Image (cartoon, rainbow, N blue to C red):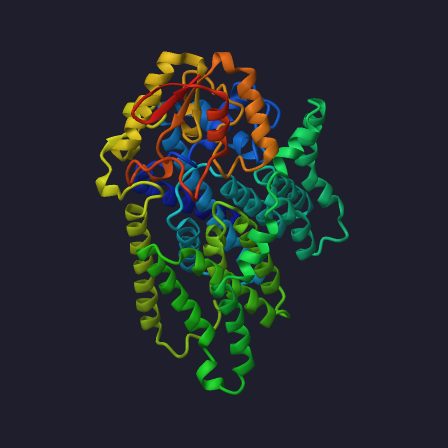
Length: 531
C-alpha cells in the first residue's frame, strides 16, 4: 500500500510540474544553434541511417534513439513536444534524488518537505537552461533512474539499474565513469556481474559497429575531444567559488568546539542562505555557474567532515559524481545542471537538525517566504533570460508559420525570417541544399534529408582534423550535386542583430572548406550560396 502511495505522489509531482512548466515556458524562444541537433540525429535514424557510420557525431547515439519517437510522431509540434519531454525528464530527476536521499540517509522525510525538496532540485537543475533535447540531460535522467533502482530494490532491480547506467553512457561518453564509481560507492564488490550488466548496452552497440566495419571511424569521432583535464579537473581547481566552498565546512569543523555557541547551528543557516543566494542568482541571471561550483565545493568539504556518517557519505559521493560528470563539457563547463541535487544534499543532511530554537510558526513563515521567493525568481528568469533569444514579452514571431515542426513557439523576427528563407531555398534546390554551419533544427522535419554527413558543423564540433577531412571528402564527392547555403551572420547572436559569422575571435573550419572548394554563385538576405 505504501509503495502504491509513493508511486502516486511520484506521478502527481511529475505530471503537475511538467504541465505547469510546459504551459508557462515551452512557447518561449528558439535558439538556432544547439536546439535540434539531437533531434536531427533522430531523424537520420528514422530514415534508416546508422550513427557514426552514415553520419558524423562526437557523441554516442543514445540520445538520438531516445528522442526518435518525438520526431516520428511530433509532426508540426515536434519541438514543442520535445520541450515537454525535457520538463518531464527534469521532474523525474528531481523526485528520484529526493527518494535516493530518503533511502540512503534513512530520513523519513515528510510529504510536504519531500515536495518542497523536489521543487528546489527541479528549479536549480533547470535554472535558465533551454528546454531542449540534450545529451547531458538524457545521461543524467537515465543515470538517476538507474541509481534509484540500485538503491531501492533487490538484485534484479540492481541489474536493471546498472543497465540504465550503461544506457546513460550511450548518451554521452562522460557517463562511462559513473559505472565503476557507483559500483565502488555502493560496495558491490561481491557482485562483479553488475559491471557486465552495465556494459551490455555498450557491447551491443559496439557489435553493430564491428558488423559495419566502423570501429576505427567511430573511435575517431567519439574520442576526437580530449579536454577532460581542462574541463573536469583544472576548471574545478581554478574556480574560486569551488575552493571557497570546499574550505568553508573544514573551517567550521575546526572552530566548532571553540565557538560552540555561535557555530552550533551554522550549517542550517548557511544552507538556508544558499537557497536565497541561488534565488538571487536566478533573478539577476548572474554567477549561476560560480554558484554551482560553490555548491560542489561546499558538499565536497562537508563530505570530508562527515566521512564517518554512513548513508550520508554514499549519497554525497553519488551526487558529487553526477555533478562532476555533467560539468565535463566544452559548451556548458559547469555543474549547474546538477546544482539542485547538490543543494538538496546539503538540505537533506540538515533535515533533522534543530532550527536554533526558532518557533515552529516562524520556521514555517520564513521557509515559505524563501520558497515563494525562489519560485518567483525562477518564473522571472524563465521569461526574461532566454538562451540566444529575447525576453518573452518581446517575442511575437510565430516559428510555426515559417518552419514545419515549430508550431506554438514564439521567437524573434530575424529567426523567423531565416526559416522562411531556408524553406524557400529547399523548395528551389530540393535535396541538393546544404546548410552550414548552424540550423541543425531545420533538418528535423525538412521535406528532404540533409545531404551533408554532419548536422551541426559548428566550430566546436569540427576542431578535430579527422572530422574536417571527413566533411571535406564528403562534400567533394557529391560536389556536382550540392548547393551550399553558408550563413552570413552568427546564428547565436541573431536575436541581437546581424553580426558577421566570423571575426578574429571565432572561425569555422567548415567556412574554409566551402570557400576553398566551391564557387560563390549567389546570395540571399541571410546566406551566401556556393556550388
